[in-house]
Image 1 (cartoon, rainbow, N blue to C red):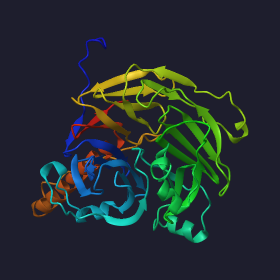
Image 2: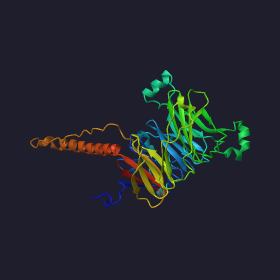
Image 3: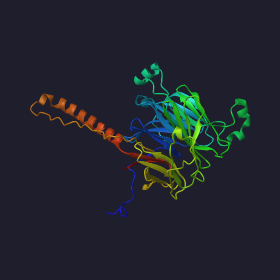
Length: 410
């Protein structure tokens, strides 16, 4: 049967539980859990083995912009209430959290995970945070605590500056004067768990960029690299070579004409020695003819990426050729976000337990052995289900309809 005759692909599962638009999804705990967040501030942690909620709480009073995980037991949420929160939610903490889904009208006050950190950040431009591990070498005591898994390693959080985000400072000059902040701040970098501001990136007043629309951050030892996408269509790369030094802009390109155009561009990440090169440009620019593509996510192996579309379609592309590989359509309304499960570099070996025969001649021990055999079979079935859920190449898509589709592709 040719590809033209094949029926449209269907999601493997559909998770129904949000009563508002799903703004963010994220796989955590080695793909054992899927986090979803909606426009009313609710967070749902789903078990990928049972496809049921294991923890539900309202993290913010307004829409959630982004979610992520920090270590094995910490969840980061970024809301439109200008708060970035860190919650403790390991597998052992789930029993103390409710499981009533937002669509089932849960009570206004529900149990929440333990709140560890709270930062006041900018949400005027709908840009979610970016995070990475802090590359600066830690003290011996901190290293020992990390090895003992008492604390996760320190991280860096990048967010648009609270005062200046592409002209926002002009609307609230009295706040800027009160706080005595420079007029050209654009991006802040915070360190957790200290909650201190680790770095600031200043705007280039010679380029009209508009608001920061997307961020990414990477750290290698003391070298820090921040990538920013702007409302004007500009993409810039900033690098800080040493802590305390000023960020330097290494790259600037404008492949987009507006935030919602139908263009996908693949950019280089220039090295420090190329700081004075001005001929740098995108590796490839593709006109997809589909406006409103957002939520772009690259799979952990770097081979494919996906976008969520206002036209209700999820599109999958090759990272190497930028060629469209698949169009996934199930939702009836626009999609806002996508997420890939982590893909391991090597295949996981599944060890199956052999059935243990029961000796018929020993009637006194038959019942006891049967119970042990049944318990082992149940345990084996659960392990098989867990392993299958965690090793599947999931692609999750969140939509305006409050549903999350799970696809098993590539």
